[in-house]
Length: 423
Image (cartoon, rainbow, N blue to C red; front, side):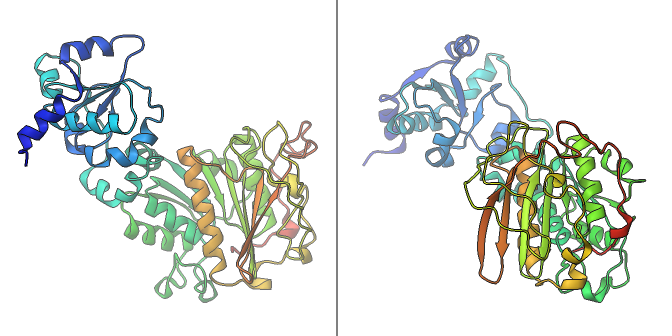
């Protein structure tokens, strides 16, 4: 049986190595190889070769294909002294990578020669690495994505049924700043579904109850509370506070139109959700940007339901102008009798948990710039049959706000529909 040193030497004879001087020359060339750091996180943070890719040796086999999908990519693997990178180079060759070398002497020799190093600045602290460890394991998120979430600003319209699960999951995910606007106080009828609040919160403003719950869940998150009803007088002040994404949890048309119009005019992605009894829906409105990655299926458009949940739909893909906005579905508010609120028609308590969680998922994807947002797609959920269906939404070129010739250029308060109740 071979000793470790014998095994290391045998492996070293089976791979190619270069010294630090040659590695420096290669790095300065126009077609420089990819430098792969296989050390642990703590070592990486203390200093690494600039522009290197970090992939600890323990995760090499399971993640290399995502980090370096092209097996013809030239790779220089390195560690502290050249031992771990020797085994890493051998593994990469066995996985089909064709141009792999190990840095003899590792980064220690690189440092001794005075070659440039990059030190991680503003990275996650030890406690944050523990808290967000499951995010860090996801290649599409990782530390870079988690730092992006911590710098993100997401505005929640309402701290009710939809806002509650959305706020909790966004806070748990580490979204750095959550704005919450709600003028209501916690009522006993809210507690069946609004999980941000508790019996101890009865009579307390919802934004204060929400802020306390979020702080207890994740101290990394700053809550910016707006204890006010959203109107045409204050929406501009609130929306221009620098939000990356807006999550709409309102259940009244005046608020939905105000938020939609502001999102269109300020080019902010809007994650919409609606609920009624056993039915829920979610979509993303982002008309100005191209609907990147959105899939449009040729499904039959569903008719408008008595609840008023489903609006104008089309089985064709969104046009080249991008995805629709809320007014593409509802140019004007429908009659009040076709759009009762949860207070009037009721709602299954768990339903906003499903839809609000979907909204949080869409908001995180938008903040990170990953995946396929629900742009141009309306996702419908029926809790009674436990089924999801999808309808493609079309951009209306005659939309009064996002169309080619907009007719609405100022905020409109539909006072006849005003109802401060949140989902």
